[in-house]
Each structure stands twice: as structure tokens, then as C-alpha cells.
Image (tube, rainbow, N blue to C red):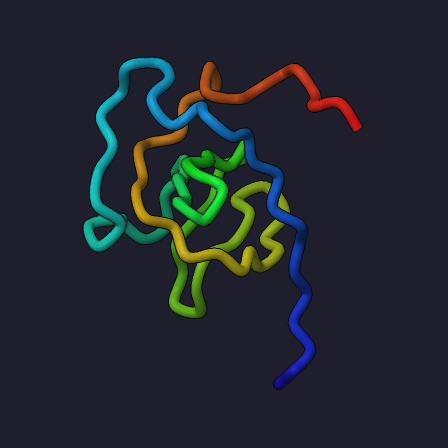
Length: 90
């Protein structure tokens, strides 16, 4: 496997339904747009706390361009108010 620059996913559990915005199936995600992504895993529902962009090679952090190795299930348009300002305890 080629060495790819990746970043760690920063997600908050349980914030899947915040802000009242409608979630869309990941198959309909547009290319080249800032999107908020949701992931469902063994621990439950998570949303990424940074905007991502869909590209030909997969998902990347919209701000840095770093590859994000995830398998999102849903998306919605990123809005600045979606950004979480509180950090999680260590």
C-alpha cells in the first residue's frame, strides 16, 4: 500500500441529529463542496467536526486537503454553526 498522508478523525458521538438540518444518503454526495459527514460504527453515530470534500480519490479535509480514511453513511452541507467549539476531555 502506498504511503498516504492521512489525518485522525475527530468526531463527536451522539451529535448526528443536531441543528435540524436534513441528512442525505452518501451516494448522493456532490464533488468539490464543503460537506459535514456522518459515520455509523460499532460505537454508534458520529459526525466529523471539520468539513470534508469528496474527490476522485476519496474524502479529504476541506481545509487542509489531507486524506481522510472513512466510510461515511450520510452527508449535509457544511455550515459554520455546525462547527463544534468545545473540545472533548482527554
